[in-house]
Image (tube, rainbow over the protein chains, first blue to last red):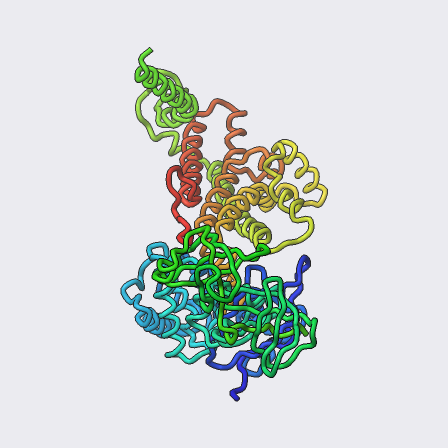
Length: 359
Length: 273
């Protein structure tokens, strides 16, 4: 197992009015692309600022490459960041912006210009070098910010929602670019975002945060298919949560009684009868059929939402619960799913995911 | 009534009013400039012919030359100090949060609001008590107190446009706090600093009352003018007036050129938003 490159050790940040980061432990491997996700105010940006030294932790420690960062000011850390606002210097030209970190390192004028131009070339901005920042498009500015952060060849790059200001089309292109850079450079990327699509497309591992705590750390598919708790399941969006209690069951299976009926779900360990047993079923794993056509739970179609190649169908179940089901266009047409249509939902019990019991 | 006619009449009245206002403001100054080139000893109509006699006379007058030099020295000193202090106050306001910040800012902002007579008398009483009365540095110090307030206002306006992320971004990229100040904050504020410099110089160059109260034997140009006026009707006054006018207007125009508040356009549109 490789030694972790960045270690957060009981990292804590308390502001006068709120507790932003609550005793977080996290080990980030060298060369890893890690995405930190969570709703706004969950502490993900604060965590990044703490790593960069832009904020002082109120407890715990950060180690980068084995060295404690306690008392090390931001400008001595070499943890460049790509800011959400980009924070480019408006009074400097493109090439001067990129050369800025080298100037701070007292690299000679000719040398720093040469290195800045190399990075601009690498990001396809060679012809823009002498321009004003104001003359660039959003995507070009984004590249300048990335070039400026990478020009000192750091071993870690911090990114704070770097693509949120771009339109959807550009965002996808920049994702590809970031992914390529990460592959080529082999350095650690710590990427804060609230966009699931970016995190899933880019990251080796995902950290889900809420209210200053880490809720789950894992590969994208694990976080998606096997959420650690109800918060993660709901944050992932395309999961349906069923709350219930254990009723017993056989080897590797648990019977769960809920307001919607009794379900069988895979379980690694038995649970005593009456213990809480909540499970999730992903929106793309639900089968829809005309009502009363076989076993399952019935519901009424509330509406549909177009998401591209698929649509999300919102279905109201007895008791007021709402289910989301993802379906291809042709399936929706075959079933004639219009609001008000009664349908039966069912799923392969093996696809249900039992949430671990809260500690 | 015809609507276009009404619009046209209203437009005409507006321009008329504006024109009258400018004439009213500019005529006295224009008169001074015109008569400074008049060959007659007393400013009377008809004009006595074009002459540079009075301009030459002020150049030859050692007291006027000294007063002019004093004004330049005090003006330059005030410009440098007020700009530096104004920047310091504005930056303090921008970067830090502290208790009593509002009283602090008010304290810097208030001197121009105090009537100059009162300020002058207070300064006179205070400075003579501590033995600093009647020195050129004293005049400068008083002018700095007034001009700093304008300098801070101009620089604060500029700092308001400085993205909160820019300085931390510089630290993040390896700049020490001092480097960030020198390489990021100061260049960003440069137009405002230049504007403050010229405006402070203009404030000092034009200021009469306080210079008169605390300057003692060290006369600045406005004080010299008054003393000339008190003596006799001297045609040199018109020539001095013309020179002072040109310098003051030039300073204010230069300041204006850099404040970036010209009507209709902003010189530095924020590209991010």
